[in-house]
Length: 130
Image (tube, rainbow, N blue to C red; front, side):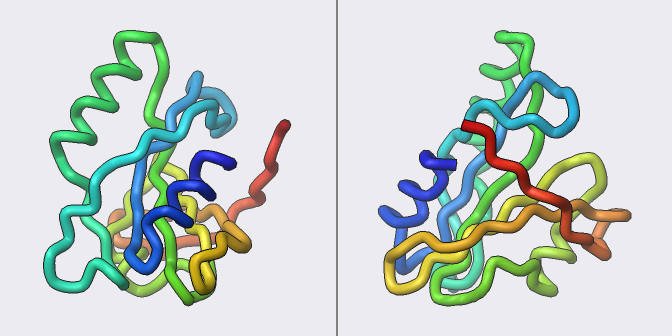
């Protein structure tokens, strides 16, 4: 979570994004990997993960016996709640973490899962282990 918070702070006022990786059990995330937001039109309110970054991260995880658990992105100056666009881009089997970043300071974060391709999304309990 510290890595995601740092990424959100550094990327403000734009949405940042990345891939969460772990051993593949119970949604445990052990690594957060930054990805480039290639959104050109509205990067302050939208993100698109660079496909080259996604492939690189997935291959690295696979080589190390890990799995992609989900994806994260920030909501600059907006709550950490799934938007209509977030739901439309969602799919089952992944955790989607959203972190609010208010005036450059990371705030709360929430996790969501999708019931089907394109949502709806439901909030999941987010437990941070230290």
